Image (tube, rainbow, N blue to C red):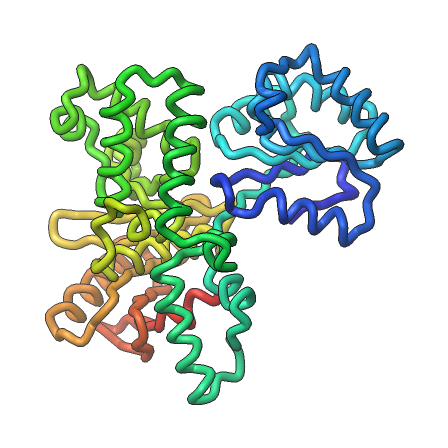
Amino acid sequence: MVKLESKKAQVVIGVRRSGKSTLCFNVLNKAQAKFAYVNFDDERLVRLSADDLNDVLKCLYQIYGDFTHLFLDEAQNIEGWHLFVNRLLRHGMKLIITGSNAKLLSSELSTYLTGRYNEIELFPFSFREFCEMEKVETTNLSTKTDALLRRAFDKYMETGGFPEIISGEETAEEYIDTLVSNILERDIVQRFKVRYKDAFKSLSHHLMNNAPCEVIYTALQKTFNFKNDKTVENYVGYLYQAYLLKQLRKYSTKSSERIRNAKCYPIDVSLMNARKDAFAKDNFGWRLESLVYLAICRKYGVGYDVYYHKTESYEVDFVVCHRATVVELVQVSYDISSEKTLNRETSALVKAGTSLKCDKLTLVTAFEERELEVQGQVIDVCAAYKWLLI
């Protein structure tokens, strides 16, 4: 998390409206830190360059007096911001930086601030955070509290984890439509000077409607009549950079195959079912799979990689690796009441476990939980409404 006394810049990245600024303010205020704040998303500051930032610093001292911490919100909006940050770090200023574009931040950070920053990736609220906000009991479950937790899970599957939706400040559909529109237009179309604006937006909604899905550039090129698949690759990359979508690569020893056969998932389940043209409202399996992927990313974090595994005969949703070692295989199925479904999902886990030399096998369902032994391997069947609390 954010380390206020570190000499490294604290960089919080994630999709817009996920609570990055609120998190930083809470940490600063709790520590009673003397800090100054500037929001580079303010339209009055959009034309600033790195040369103007020293004047901004002077104004901040006039407004706040002396301060030990400087909070730069949406820093990537200012070209050359990293030069300003580097200079402040050399002079001992403690910095907190937020941003909502992965590439603009990470490429400049790795180039100019190597070893001088701590990166924190922030997602919309997890199910545990959702329950805390809704004041739902998550431990020592009785008949009543277990039922209330299940009810909260159903609601989370519907609304997702954006804080302002959970708090009831706005309806999910209005909020998500506005958020997606702003990200597509301001953060992508305008910033990257997207040439085929309408086709790009259609592509974006198509991917959100069909996630989780394999992203096949040549097929998308034909569907949306782009001139070449490189344009599609660039446009999909913009969606990853803006955190609307999160990439999941295929498990393979060949790097070209990992990149070429990637899947995409929405950064929050509300993008699948709260948009006005969403088509995943009744597909609980898609939504649960997306929630599980994001939970795995939160749980394992830095130092771990997540893939999917697919052969000609079976597929496993998630392969968690630490360096070259597979540490967990996770399969997702909303409902395993059908014997055919149960056999398919467990068979895939067992085959993958043998092939990838992994004995931690997990099958996440909506509400069912038990332990299975299949062909000498133990599979932990977990109820999502409890498993998501990890």
